[in-house]
Length: 297
Image (cartoon, rainbow, N blue to C red; front, side, top):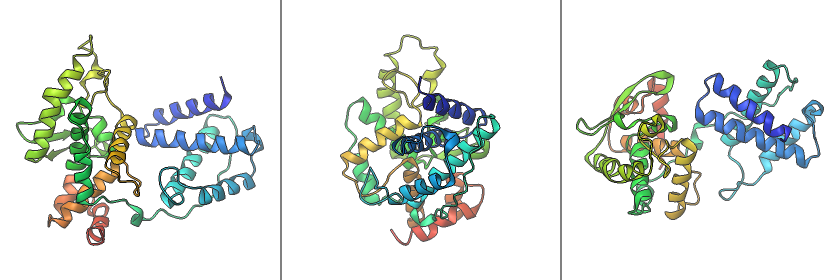
């Protein structure tokens, strides 16, 4: 097996052991893989021979590289996240006794203004892009959880079927940020979308599985193999919807839906404190960024 693949897999296990969020593990390994691809093109075959000039040139490469998903270059957030992933990788190499790789690059701080917000019209286009088959019904439920309930990526992926309390019109988030749990209220429309998914599409999908006792099948969102969907799979579904809705000029992820509902709730007149509780923020400071976004959409 390629030594690069072995190293990245070992790095991934290290991150998981230390309890990093699934999204951080996924992004970190992807960014490190991009770095190795750059090294290969530069004909650098060993970590031991990497010099500061190599890292400086890689940083410049990121600043001039075109964005593969949309027009223009990479965002400052993307570049900062990339460099931070390399710093985690450096720490992994050091703590596992492999090699010393100093990452002295200090990228510009990511700015809050780079948050991507969808308009309410664009959200409606995403809903309209959902088909009426099993996947489309599940897609509507995904939008309802991530936009309608404003959940974080891992919060939605970690939901179990019993966490959706339809009678009470609540979603029980057991694994929030900082291991805090909360209850998120749902509207009648969201309840209808979730009911349609749970009692029609999900039951049909679950019937494809012979072992009904499999704990992996307890997840709210199931793949067509009746396995729990994880964050990456859910993101792929969202990307399909954004393409179908022809929203091509914005870099959209699951957190975009969370940013959007926060902005739209403030625009509708909801108090900052209420939005903060809805999002599960530990302090109002985390929510205040949306107050100015609500005026610039």
